[in-house]
Image (cartoon, rainbow, N blue to C red; front, side, top):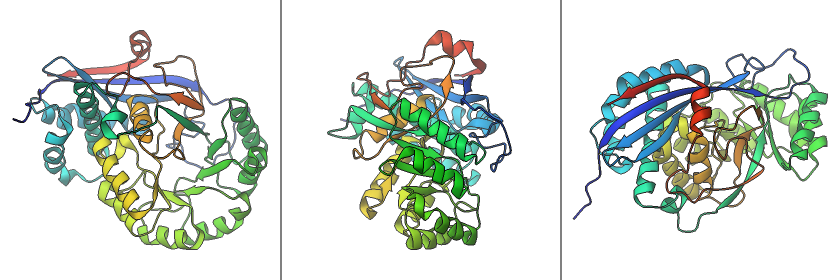
Length: 379
């Protein structure tokens, strides 16, 4: 007889805003826009967290993308997606198709999909708790219990001296792999000199170029030997242009802004990416990530989850990465926080994962409420 799963009894929404320092010594002109979370205009980072409680009293956590789109993601959770789940099985297998079908007319990415991502993650947290296993052990037979991290640096205005300085700061903390948010040859070359020839070095240019501009830039950047070039073109889902660049240069990565699971899988299957980078808070939660993992394995394309989070999505990304090969590292924002919300917050360059069932996300309640800017309860 199939075990009857408890239903979703309540959903709580928490919008948390935590101040941070990026350690910048200078502020200047930027080559990225003010909506980018690595911009100097950001001095606090928001996390939109979702707590799903089932009828047995267990609670699971998820997180929706994010940053300056949070007002829209909040509205989607409070008014559309959250109410849909109330009274339905607190189980990702039972509810995913119905939820995605119910909201398919609203698009395969965007705030409604971010809301679905958060609830799906929370349901997987609950499923692993019911199985009395950490999520990684529910998903894989022999996952890792420790994982390495790479430092994801913010944008330093294409200043070679400043970029090298912050690579050095990360090295002092023990990091050996680094992701930039710079796009100029001089800044990236300075990073390579500081990092050394053996270090993994990547850059995310945030869809800065046309396909022709991207080709010219990648030729200029060849001496820096980047492991990957992340989202080189606009629009980010121009699969044919990405495929052409990847065939010519290799090392193209994308996926954070893919049009849902099928958009990401299309980029994998057509050879548009050497590294697929879905984001658990955007693409559809853990259920969607597992589909991307399977497609990557089938096509021989590496999957490296994107993770510019500090809430439950950080835990979810870490648990997922623990099921992949040892070469896959967790992205952690290279920031200094005034408070630590939970055990993994600000951790790195190597972390040991929790043995608690589920995601292992256990926020410090006092710190959570100190930085809480909005809260809602659905029941």
